[in-house]
Length: 167
Image (tube, rainbow, N blue to C red; front, side, top):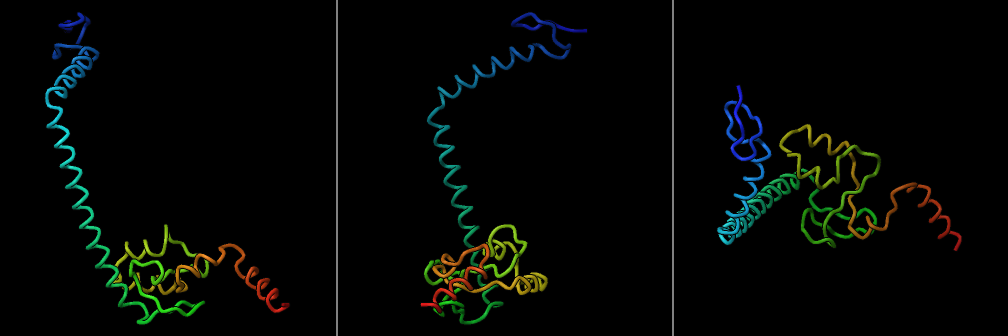
């Protein structure tokens, strides 16, 4: 059993009154007309949603970041110093000049950066602390970390030392 569409007179199922193509066309017309009449309300609603969404996310992220950074500071050394230039540093200070930068001494399987790994894993689990110590990251300042090369590091340092000894 079937019916005919009220608009274009195509065959449709018994339980339907309008075919899919006519329904889509009419829906678009309805949405456009609704948008034109309620344009200002819709814009205000969207702006309010965006502001609230961003504010909540920012607050949640800050508390999460502070909690994990304080927990990890208890695990690390008390007074960190750069291993190259011996400058006094701080953990998670937010200032690039004084913040500890963790350097990969050897290949480590971490998704992104050591900092992002710390922010995703809690030190309350002993397995996370053991994994972190197993990684053996070097503690450097930002400027020393930027000046180190990534590939063939040992060969580059040996050649640089030989060059400076010759002079």
